Structure formats: structure tokens, C-alpha cells
Length: 462
Image 1 (cartoon, rainbow, N blue to C red):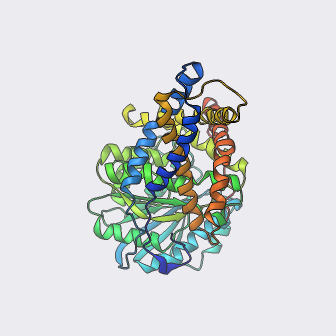
Image 2 (tube, one colour):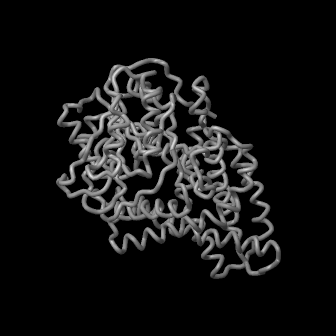
Image 3 (cartoon, helix red, strand yellow):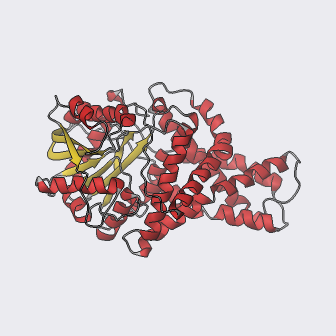
């Protein structure tokens, strides 16, 4: 797998192993055979419904995995003259400065290899505590531009938080005349650095696909050397696999990003972004997902996949991880219920929230199975109709996290033997990470009910 500090290794295969899933499935079937029963009761009915609820996600992700197996990281060596604006919104607090500098410095290092005309726009607030420090740090480099959102700035729809900052950044580009079909914006979070593969993929997409596909979404990787918390590190294992399966299915195969987009590793043609905008209203909302749904409505069939990584940092502590999940749940719920889009585009996010909320109850079933295996309980758990389905779904989630764990480990500075992490992943996911994800979701639901609009900043490792 690609290591960001070894530039000669461009072009390795990205796809994830389907045979690995088959091997896990047959191993899990042993537990099904041991525990299967023809007796139906309230528990077996509940178990059937609980594990059936995620099947749409499993099926879509599996289809995406099958089709993405032949993908390789971009190894394009050509150059393009289009203006590329790397846009990084940040709250500009001292807690994020190390990560922000890592991101900007990675662009300064790699962008010149494929791009003739480019700039980094750091979008931050006038009240940012570290604004002057950021300005001073990059005062020597003409490629870095600090865009300051005035305190009194308001959007037409009174957007808040990141949506407000993104809309100001867009209006800034419009005022500068940087909007046409030859100018592109590349969006990054303030903890997501790039590598040579990222810039190569940007140039390759614009050169060969830019006229046909107006956006391209890449893969989010989370190198382990940037993650201080082992729980958060393992929890983020699902994210690169999600990009190569579920997101790939909608963005590349269907070419309609109905599950939204990420706010990083996102390439957008400037005139298209200007038509859609980021003015999402006065509730905390998943602005990148909302942008994806608006794009789906206006430009169906015009999205593509970017065969490249960005390199982000997992939350530094379990508390920060829960705060991050809380914010995600609030934003997704607001999008599903109040997003500025027709209902048919928002239903998938309502389903996602419900599925997230059911995670902990699914894990209870696993615990009960283990207790039965050791004859500590004796009531029926699995009936024949759900046996194979349960085995496949259970196997799928193990495989899902294992693949992402492998990707994140392989892009780390000092990869560890995969089997050591793999053995730890199973009990961690089902007994620790799953319940923590539920807690973060429940916290988010409570915040949504309270109509909490604050934006919490978590520390980001550099």
C-alpha cells in the first residue's frame, strides 16, 4: 500500500479483497450452526429485525467493493495549467495549528509536481485566536492566502458554523473572478494533508475527465502515527473502506452522490460550486453531505472518483471522538429532517441515523451468543431463516473494519504487523467501539432535541 513519504511507490492497487470476506464468512458460519434453532420467540424476532436493518448498506457496500477492486492510486506525471485553489476552512484555534501547518506544508511540497497555477486559501474567522500567528507563519510564501470571514458577515439564509465560512469563501472567489469551467477548488479539512498521489489524481481528473464529471471524491485515510488514542484509531478504520465501497458505489458507479460527500479530498469545478453554494440555513448541518445532495439534484450522472488519499488525524482522546460523533449525528439529523432539499433526497440520511442508533443493540446479540456458546445461557438466539444472513452481515462488518485498519496501518510511518491489530480489532469493535459509537449518537440525538447550535473544536494531532 502507498506510503506518503515514499514518492516512488505511486500506483499500487487500491481494491480490497473479496476472498478475505469469504474466509471470514465460513468461519462465522460455525457459530451459526452451533446456535441455530427452529424455535421462535421475542428475542429471535428482534434479532432478525435488528440484523436485517443494515442489509441495504451491506448490499450497496458489497457491490461497491466488487467494482473497486481494480483501482490503483494515480501515477499521472503530466502537468496542467488550470488554476487550482486548495481551500481549507479552520476555526484557527491554537489546538489545531500543528495539524493546519502539516496540511498547508504538504500542499506547498507536492502541488508544484503537477500544477502550474495553484494557491492555498486558508479560510478562518476574524475572531480566530491564532489568526495573527497563521499570517506570520506563512507571510513568506505567496502561494498561501489567508481569507478572513468578518464578524458581521451573514448569508442570505443565515447559515452558521462551517457553512457560513464556506459560503464566504465562495463569495470571495466570485468577487475575484475565479469562477469558470477551467478553475477548480480542492477542499480539505484542517487536519487532512495530501501526498503526491493526491495532486497527481487532481491533475489527471481535470485533464481527462474535467469536461464530463464536475466533482470527484477521493479516499480518507487515517495514518496511525497521527492518532494518539488507540480507541479512536481503531474506530476510524471503517472510513477508508467506506470510501471504497458505499461512497464508491454512489459517486463512481451510479455517479450520483446520494450519500453525500466529504469535506476533504473533494475536487469541484468552480462554476458548479457557485451554482450550488453552501448557504444551508441556521441549523448545524452536514454541509458536505448537503452539498452532495444538492449536486445530485442538479447534476445527476456527473460525479466521479478520485484515486488518491488524504491523510487525516483521528481524535486525540475518546472524549474528543464522542464529541465528534455527537456533532456528526446532530448535523445528519438536521439534514435529514430540515435540509433544504426535497424529502426523497433526505430519506437516506434519516435511515442512516436510525441505523447508527441501533448499533449497540446489535452488539448485545453477539454477547448473548458468546454466553450461549459457553452454556451460560440457554435460550434461542438464531433461527434458520436468518442464519446465513446474520453470518454474512456479521462477517461483513469484521471485514469492513479489517480492510480499513490495513489501509490506515499501511499509510503510517512505521506500519506494525497487521495480524496484531487484526486480533485486537474484533473484541474492541463489538465490545467497546460499537457501544461508544452508540453513546456518541445518543449524545447527538439529545443535542438535536435541545437544538444545540454550538460548534465544538477538538484538538487535532500534527
